[in-house]
Amino acid sequence: MSTLLSNQKICGKSREDFLAAIGAFHGWKAPGLVIGGFMVDLAQELIGPGVETDAVVESRHCLPDAIQIFTPCTVGNGWLKILDWDKFALCLYDRHGLKGYRIWLDIEKLGKYPNLYNWYMRLVPKKSLPLELLLDDILAAGRAILSYQAVTMTGLYQREKKSETGICPSCKEAYTLTQGDRCRACQGEAYYISN
Image (tube, rainbow, N blue to C red):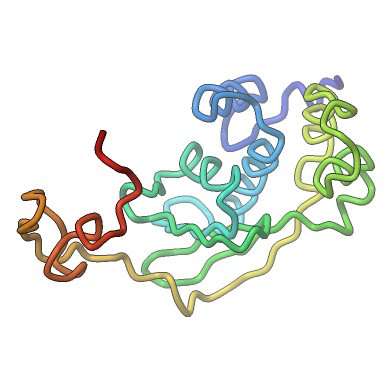
């Protein structure tokens, strides 16, 4: 790997620390998450330092973790919204001014990197593209496979406020009263059965 790539900083971290943070959080150095890190890095540079951001991701896969690793935006604090659109795109925006940047994996640009294109489009079996090969290609491509546009948020920018809490008359557990007169589980929407 060239000296340029070995000195590469991504999200303010050395390449090794960047990949280690991904592995520690996600369980492995997932190629999509590595690309997501470059997306976050670009968005942060474009939006500038000192801006309090919120985030929207357009996929449940990998991108939410990139946001949660490299920004203060998480699902738990409500600063990260996840859309299940299965588009490899994210948006960081100023939570006060609602202006930001949408970054996406540009398929036309990805075409210059056949291994990455074949992996992303699922054109070859995973076994044919070893992780180290994909990671080398992603690190070499960096931001060259991304596109971006300036945006102004028109929706999804309001944080959800917690509503009033009550006690479910059926199970006796606390729940949000927006669910109705009983919690969702007791209304037949439980994801489990008691053994």
